[in-house]
Image 1 (cartoon, rainbow, N blue to C red):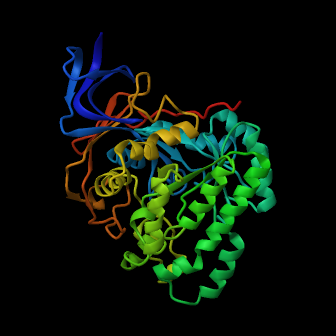
Image 2 (image 1 turned 90 degrees about the horizontal axis):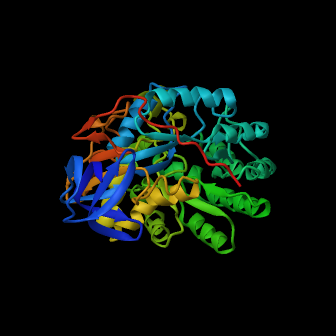
Image 3 (image 1 turned 135 degrees about the vertical axis):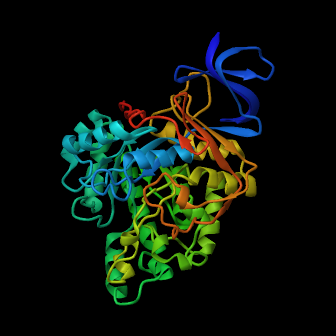
Amino acid sequence: MRFDKIIKNGTLVLENGTLNASLAVKGEKIAAILQDGCDTDADEVIDASGLYVFPGGIDTHTHFFDPGAEYREDWECGTRAAASGGYTLVMEMPNSSPPVIDKETFYLKYERASRHAVVDFALWGGAIAGGNSHIKELHELGCIAFKGFTLDAGPQFKWLDHQQQMDAMEEVKKYGKILGFHAEDENIIRELKMRYQDTPWNLSLHDKARPYYAELLAIQNAVALAKASGCPLHICHLSIPEGAELLKRAKADGVDVTVESCSHYFLLNHEDNYDSGTYALIQPPLRSRERMERMWDYLRDGTIDYLGTDHAPYTREDKEPKDGNGWNAAGGAPSIDISYPLMISEAVIKRGIPAHRLAALCAANAARRFGLYPQKGTIQVGADADLALMDMDCRWKYSRKGSFSKTKSTRFPYEGRELLCRTVATFVRGTKVYGEGMIYTMPGSGKFIKGQKGE
């Protein structure tokens, strides 16, 4: 057989370990895994000597602000940044403006993404108070999952109280889908915001105003409701080891729950990154150095299922309010162009977590959970040729000045951080999207990945 391309001499990161072999691609699919020395023909041969070939990353949690605030980020810039970081599929959250809560708002985002994305994309649907009647149509349109908030998320995205969470779970369950939550307790955070609002904001105070127990209580409630309803549950951007321990016990008790966290909860904290100020303001907050280190235990033992980025770029005007009041700064930070190689650097190279375990956290586990496996998230024959070639012997310092993202402020906390791994090339369904610091495909080359039908 003649192949379209062969990636030779690389170290393939498979699901059960690594293998020094060549990878053959035909059309959009992985056609063969070839032991070195096989004599085969291909239209293009790519020498991956010294590189690890990881499955393309699946980012379970992005915010591109498109539609609504494209001056911060949009589908083209956001997915270009994703490709430069080794991501081949992004799962875009619904809380844009307007949020994805019905057929009209779904198509508004879908059409923009279809015209501009350079990597594949899936869309979350919104689970909002009073919005359960739209869940069926969003499911039929292909939403990958549904997201709700357990605290005030603004007037457009109405948060869910306890009974509304239960109602949404019962509806989402009908269609075999997953309900994810931004889990922080509204009552606790509302009360503490009133107490602290006259005290000058700082990063440590942000942690006190949105304390660990507010997240823990919201997770506990969501788990109890998931257990009662039988609805598959997804916990977004977990930041606390106490929550991980609770979720570990819930899994052992048979609750259908999976856990997402993000690189910043393993690498940043409000003590070491205090001087970043509002540029390190995210929700849930950066926690203490001690809690950050404890999070690694739950990454190692499998309690945490996948790593999203929670990519949410904000401008200087968003982060530095004109009134100088940090309480009015927007919460969020960019990371989609660095999270995958950053976690390879920290988890695999520095802490000794096997490469295939990290690949599962960044790709395979999400593909399995959201019904996309084995089309996505894995290096095996028949899967989409979504690949990230990584140089794991490359010492370099990151700067947002060179990012494809719209927001290029150098005040965000990863600025100047030294990495030991760098994305060399990214392939989406066999086509080279990123390499040599350039994007090779045209806007709109990304494909909509529709959520699978439930049973």
